[in-house]
Image (cartoon, rainbow, N blue to C red):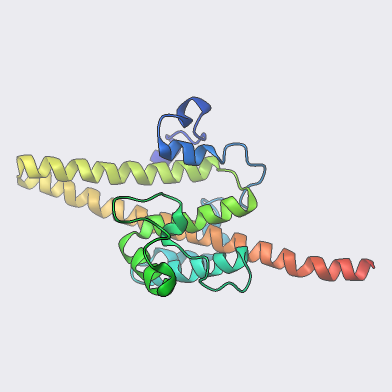
Length: 220
């Protein structure tokens, strides 16, 4: 976590927004007026069980599926899987993979299972972004640091794998294995914290919705 604190937590600047499609996507959240009730640093204390389920391999697949369904029905109550598309179309398409035009509506739960298994990070990120879009939630500095730290580790693993393929000796293989182990642990931890953050936000807002009509009725 000390290394994580060394990373910049500020959002993408206006100058950086136009440099890539990814920056343009996250640039949309710079001026959003609201924030998550709890950031990823503290989400594990708010929803500890959800954090564990979201972090554990295999179990996290079920957790990602359940959370996406929960968020979709939070945004559109009673809609089931009706509004599901691959990664909720948050990351665009590539070649033959075009969200919304791959027959997802024929078997949405099955597609979501494949998404959670093959693209675990994108699956939970898409669910989180869906909530950010719905409630105009802004980015948090702590969240930015954690996500960037995870991304840096994944890049380091890729570099280590390339170096090991070129040099191919015991030292490079050992370094690659150590980095892969660390990166996997961090990825699972980040997934768990992100899952807990989104789950807590959905529960909080659903509770607020259920209380508001009662309060209005009493005032009348």
